[in-house]
Structure formats: structure tokens, C-alpha cells
Image (cartoon, rainbow, N blue to C red; front, side):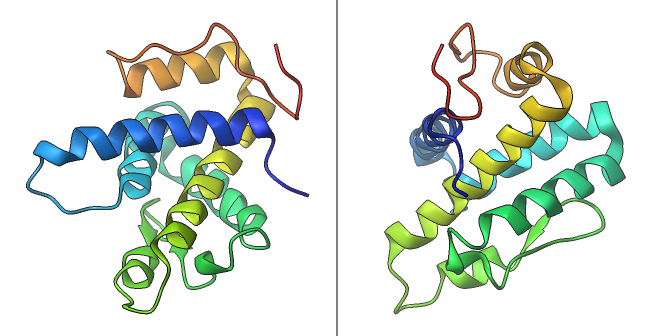
Length: 146
């Protein structure tokens, strides 16, 4: 089972935005990690640390079969994503593969949010994390387009 195309597209847009925003930042962090961290902060306020950690762990479990590069990653008790940075620094690793893994993980997390919280609340949380960004009126979920 793969991530819904709409969720993957949304995840790609968020990662692309963070990649562009990160050009002015002194921090050399992965755009996918930046998206994950923004989601952690935004959702943590809503569902708490344990709630986010649970959702993120499930998303990681769902993403691993599609992205073997995530096999060394884990979600810590505080909800932070660990182990992905070490994967990204491996010289022999294909950068596109790592980026795809991050996008797949974000897509799986967004899919779970839509499933458990609903589309309207998920969009509200995304707008909270990215207040200046424009999101579509509806999020295509579970392979449907709207």
C-alpha cells in the first residue's frame, strides 16, 4: 500500500517550500526534517507530545516498506525524528532516495491526520504551521481527487 497521491503531492509542496526557505537559513537541515519539526510543533499543541509521537511512529511504520532509507529512523519519546540525519550524511546514499523517504513519511503523517482529525482540522493545523502559505481548499485523501 502506497501513500495517497494527493498526500504525496502535498508533502512534496511542503518539502519544496522548506527547501527554498532554508536557502537563507544558517542551519543545514533536511527540508523533510524541517517539515516534520513544524508538524511536530503545530500538532503537539493540539494532540500533545504523546499523541504526536504515536501518530508519527505509525506514519514511520507505514512509510518504511516504501522507503527503505527510513529503516534506521525512529520517533523519540518527545516526538522528534531521530536517525534520519545520519542516513542523509552517508556518502554513498542517493540524495533523491533520502528525499523521497522524507516525503513518503510526511505524506503518511498527513494521511493519518486526515483520517483521524478530518480534512478541515488538518488544513487548519497546516495553516497554523505555515501561516503565509496557500493551501488548496480541499486535501485529496485516500487516492481521491477533489
